[in-house]
Image (cartoon, helix red, strand yellow):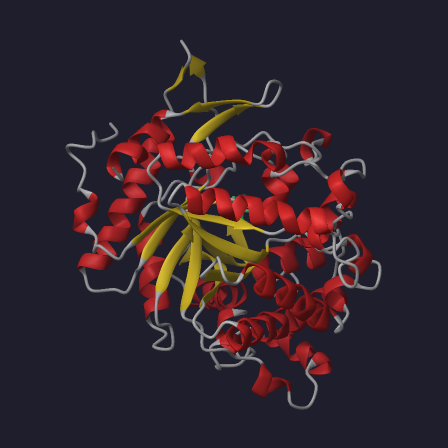
Length: 450
Ligand code: BGC
């Protein structure tokens, strides 16, 4: 049974500087996809193609956060959440990705930031949460090395425009997901496939993260600069050498590929020889440009994966044993509910002495929520959050570095290729009427953080 606030460790069990927050992303909530001069992004184009997203869902309206941000920031306040992480839609402020600036887009994020500040909520800006301007995709997107300078231009605009008001900057969200799903598997925008797309996208994304962070540092030396990575706790299927080796390969891909070059450790080529193909895209001088001394690193964990050796799977020689087949509790995403995963990931990332601060910048769960008598009793999500927060506390009490926890997410929203079916919010949305209803998990967070 979920715990009552009285039975749950109080937030005082964490140190007073511990950052509690909630995270959202532009394309998943804003809607207003072509309003006030916004240019199209790769997600606008991808969702307009048949068969790409479950039920043909798209983000054209989404949660209409573009128009309803005042109401939604009031909800953040009501939930007593002191930190709000959101992303900037690149093509809302630079409709073509570079060049001409859209004043209405610039004004919009000023209003949003001002609204947060007026309510005493600290804004955390993610520069890139996957919605590349379509104009740039036409020129190759992340496969074109020019993306590094395009991203520098966008960064410069954001930091010079908002840097006086916003202290906390997250350069990029989960590079392995948008390059893997978008440029290797074709499951996310822009829907490209294969190593010839994936490898250049990897190197250009890593270079762009470091380059963007340097620009923020140059323009606002006092800014708090971080970037975020997805991570999965991995265990071998059987206690066999070949499954353990398979885990090492998947670990290199899912958990080490991006963070290690950024920490100055290079790409994990030894465990994942296919990465030798990156050589073709690494130019003279790149290795010196690849790392950055971040103020914090964000990790985002949702589950664990069980890994098996599989010679038939190209490049990686490993496969996942689906949670559904393992007869374990799962979420609407078919991800195993395994709270200890977050503890294990905190431990794993603590092994990098280069990380100064480690924040959980996303954690949460999707379950089918049923509204009854005007209430949403989301007991599974409530228990998931409580169990995960307890694991974070466990890590902290054992002396591991962990400096914050942000829930994914504020409201139900557009869950990428899965459309609106998975509901992750602390707040329920009726997508017909846009009515917001705080779920039991939201009420609990509000008491916990009061
Ligand atoms: C992403 C979010 C996404 C969430 C749940 C993370 O991978 O940053 O955009 O909605 O996980 O899938």
